[in-house]
Amino acid sequence: MRRRDALSGLMVALLPSIGHGQPFAPEALPEPPPAPVIPAGPGPQSWDSVFRLAARLRRLGQDGLDVAAYAIPPDSLGSSEPATFHAAVYHAANAALGDLVLGRLRQPTGRGDILRDPAGADFPRWQGELVGAAEPAGLIDRAANLPEGAPALRAELAKAGGVVAAGGWQPIPPGGTLEPGMEDAARIPALRARLKAEDPVLAAARDGGATYDAALEAAVRRWQAASGLEVDGKVGPISQGFLNRPASARLGQIRAALDMRRNPMRPGDERRIEVNIPDYVLVVQEGERVLLKMNVIVGKPARATPTMRARLTTIQFNPTWGVPERNAREDLLPRFRRDPAGMAAKGFRLYSVVGGERVEVNPASVDWSSIRQDRFPYLIRQDAGDGNALGRIKFIMPNSDDIYLHDTPDRSLFGRPDRAFSSGCIRLAQPNELLNIAFEGMGWDAGRIQRAYDSRQTQSVGLRRSLPVRLHYTTAVVEGGRVRLRPDIYGLDAAYVREMDRGGVRMASSGGAAR
Image 1 (cartoon, rainbow, N blue to C red):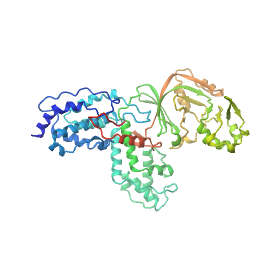
Image 2: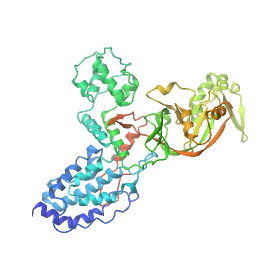
Image 3: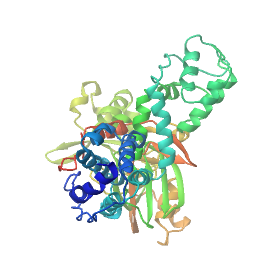
Image 4: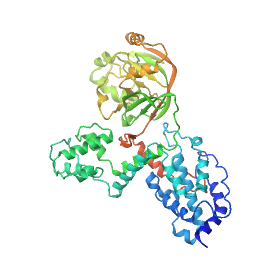
């Protein structure tokens, strides 16, 4: 029997049952409608198109997916058992199509910033197209390019995959900052080799050996610009740490970036605040229009800023700071030991709870050498004022983690390329500009705002229109068709990829799925 005749006969029997296949967790996807009935006689696909579909599925790695997760049959099965081959190819295609359209992870663990839109994706329509497409491999291509920035990310993924396949790179040996003009027989050749793995311009340039020459400096600057770091041509601890990440980590970041962009819930036209944690940037948008963009400081890795969605509801002028217990134990206890009077002068007040009542304690009366970090007995509050850790204004967005946006008296860190220094809350480089946007239409002109500051009194003002806030974790930023990767400061990309790859094989005949 000829292949084409075999296919047309098999489609009548096999494709309707494939359309009913459920490769996803039942709670993640509605039951698809019955597949269309395929008429007898020549079908829309040629037998060769089924082989091309199988070949396309074997290239799912270029889309950031694990090919082994889809049980794609070998072409040899097409000759020996055509019915089994055809069914297996379409089962695999149905499962892969679901992951490309809806995301491999339907709801990633602990990621409050990622929401999918299953209804908006209309996956049953994609399933129907898969059954009826004359060239189903083309449908897989279309689905693979759905995510925003997909062409640039897939190109970057191919480059990263090539580096990994070639063995990656060796780390640059530790040492001080490398600067243009220096010579180092071990570290500078290692730096050059590391950058050549990704920079064809440097790879084609004359090898400067142990000298940090102009070609190497230009390559460092290109790499720093692409990585969102300070472009100074110097390789200090931050640049070296990022350069020394394994090539596989870069590959994983891009895989995560592609999957996170699949089938996102669109924000709509409402004015909103977006904080990209690893990019250290806050943006206020209205639709696609950017109203404000500023640098921010986020939580250090040991006190990570959580991803979340909340609403900004209240502005507080001249806030006091109720110091969290961890900050009190780890940050302020050493300072009280050194200079209790100085801490009091900075507005820090100490309280003890006696008989259920809060009683203020004079810091000078405490034997600080006897106070243990694991049994810190006091509550600490800092009075409002110019030196308050929250600055002169606090932006309150109720949430279970007690995270908020705020001013800061220390402005020196906003110019740093790495800005993960806080205890979890977000410090703003331009708090007054955000205040003006939040107060729009409320009758608060510059004079009234200044009087609120000058009063030195803590005052809370509810917003007439609350603003949605999303704290998201996006290390891959696509700008002008180019990909800029920020460091995975909290390891969330690595965790995302591990969860993607724990899903196992997608089986269209079962309900099992990765989360």
